[in-house]
Length: 500
Image (tube, rainbow, N blue to C red; front, side):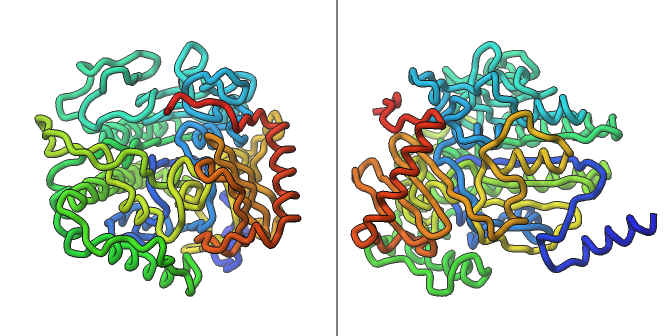
């Protein structure tokens, strides 16, 4: 007992993050995922949007400044759930079969998922509330891939006040229709409410740890939110304009130590000083989506504390990819029960969301692949910043280590990379022909639209200076390494997707 107390105090008091450990008791684990939220959209990442509950997780744990993902919803989720590059498990694109082994649109049944391993090897209760989007069909559903309980959206983007035609929702193996949803249905609240119900269910078996995956659809398009929340932001963006909001975010990021003091928005990427009333409303809707999600995170935290589960629960918060410019703002007539709906908030606001980085969702520039990542763990150094690279595929092996589970097969990801900040690793990415190779010294990027390879020094995160012309040997070496990786991970960067 004395020895345990000494070790616990040493863990709590240590100023070296690498020295901290989780409790000897297997922890409960909650993974919370946002959808299409940019790197700078949380208060703790520099935003003006009010996210006090998510910010509190960062204050109590670790905030990663270089978390990488695959720049699209389905493949990023596949990496999170398997610890693998997405093509290795058949989800190199979305949930439609593109006729290639790495692009089947559903998780490979021969590759065990994180919840399957936690449930079968460590006796965890496993729950999921929210967006699945990694395969619909017999054998591919979440209740067939390791989750004891599930309710949520099986398919892709959907409205927030009803189930859209052609989309699929389910609960515990039963398909839902729009008529099955309550009259006051709001997707974000529904996801939160069901997750809280699962926490109550887990509390009935306190001898068993639990894994809860909460996959919000916010702030993915279409943008819809309660009028009272939207109204708090209406007018504030018009008063400031695009450039001022972005510059204020960058200044906060510098003050928080998230970016270098000399970080800047280059002249060629300067945004307009003025935004229209329509742009103001669109961004207010986007901000409200994030606020409503943050409220949900607050409710989850309160539920964990009420049920005395907080002190042995790891909570992770991430976004699946960077902000999107896919759907420019296009407003629709108001629907009964909610004030306004728009297809998106446009390219300029997406640039603000990804401040100070270049590019957007689908692309392999930093704006597409760099995402917020917060880990709150009992005994962890509070307010820690982790600046070395980590990846979505590191999440599963890390969680398995905490649970004391040895993976059945080798994983592409690294367990607890933040404990190995000096580790030399190379990270690869491919999506819709966009490619990336990142080493400790360089980042090689192929943008499909440009049809050219670009090379950036690793500390040039804003990707301002393409040095490919002066480092042909580096480019050739990294291109070969990419080709070798692609050949061994079912990657086909010329596969045709089903979008124009």
